[in-house]
Length: 89
Image 1 (cartoon, helix red, strand yellow):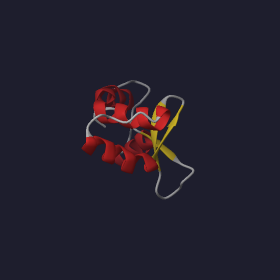
Image 2 (tube, one colour):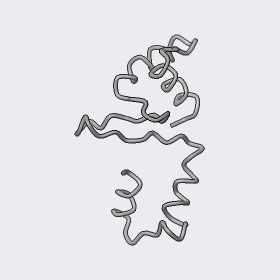
Image 3 (cartoon, rainbow, N blue to C red):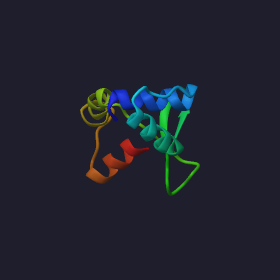
């Protein structure tokens, strides 16, 4: 997720602070129902299992995560499906 949008959503859920732009306000209010903040991270509520939370990744975190799961010696993978499931969880 793009950094500004992530921060706007995080700030609203955590502190009820809305962005100044009217269109951003409406978007944040609508989307905030599907997200939760835990341990200072933003999580999306899984539609299939309301007790399961999926961590939202910022764009600037993506390269590090892909490196850790793909190129790091401890993060090797054997198949695309197992790699996807590993990152998803």
